[in-house]
Length: 528
Image 1 (tube, rainbow, N blue to C red):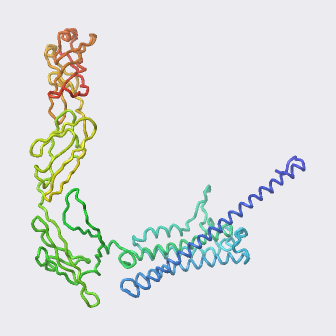
Image 2: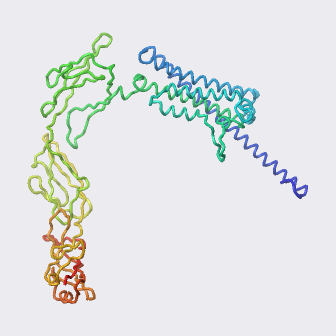
Image 3: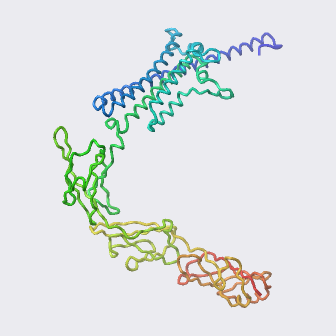
């Protein structure tokens, strides 16, 4: 840029541009160095907070181990091993960071812009293209921590995610740099040639990973069965449902309550005094103690409500504590028939009388009623639904319970139109192809319409149709048989020719106001 056949003045201008660009690059580099330093400060603050949590976990575990050694002694030993592995690597990393900062003057400890040289770690960790003695020590410490943690956690599935994180964060497998094909040693990839402040930040992040993993391991240890006093466990507790009565009617307000119950062996009662409907229950025969529960083994009895009463007795500090028992349950008759419903078949059809049965179990027919637009009542719970416009109708069943409470239950039904009828000749629909018949038979046959595979038996009366012979004008016919004009056109048709019967008009017998969909045509092949 400053060479070539240029005037001295132009060369000077170009050189000034180069200097200016270099200054911009230098300023940007200093900003990046400062960013690394600020990031390292934040990670260090987070590490201090994590240390406090880990110390609190360990202190709590020491207390538990002193109070209940049979439960917490092994747990404390495992936690101490994890702590030793974590502290060893953390202290080693801290010694490296101290060595790095020893190369910086006392007044420049917080001046990240002067911590831009890679010399310290490049000299300490690397010897040409291989790791130096100190580099191998760093590698050995990282692997010792990783393998020690993984071995201590063992095959326990509770630690599977933690083991996966340890193997990933402390993997020293060769790395292929972006845009390169040749692999590079992981330590060289992460630390060779980087500014000192960047390498220090990475070291601090390694310490953060160590402390976080220790925290996650301790948290996992102190959950579950061994830490019932420190955290809730689904194995030691269960939710129980308390209700003032054993059964509720539909629509009634449910006023039950969910309570928490402890079900581990440590809460087993010393004895129980329980009666069922006044009969004293016998331990070993009518009930047993299992996992803190009093498990009953009695007959449900006859249909109706049954009451359990009595008390559970616990010994505490030499005295007996009584917990009252007053629960009830209901026994119902075993059903001898199933109720099967096709959910998508809640359908009523427009234009027909849809028979329906409306009832409510436990309520007599004379105290049950149904209501909906188009619904009319027959006898003994039977109704007829004649739906009007719209796509849905809500049918509500209402009844009065024995206790005088009135309930209502709605049911939604889709309204569908009668499907498209199929035209027929001589009772044949011709869906398999043209109906083959004699010319004379066609002259006297009736044109009809039917609803194939429809759930209602409807009589359809044909009132007219169109008749077509190839090469002849279309003949409009009133009624259900060919008229003289149609017969005349038929006589001009050739043998084997197909004639068409279409635009068939029909009405529902007894409901002539309903307009049916367009009826499919009929094709007739002349046999003579």
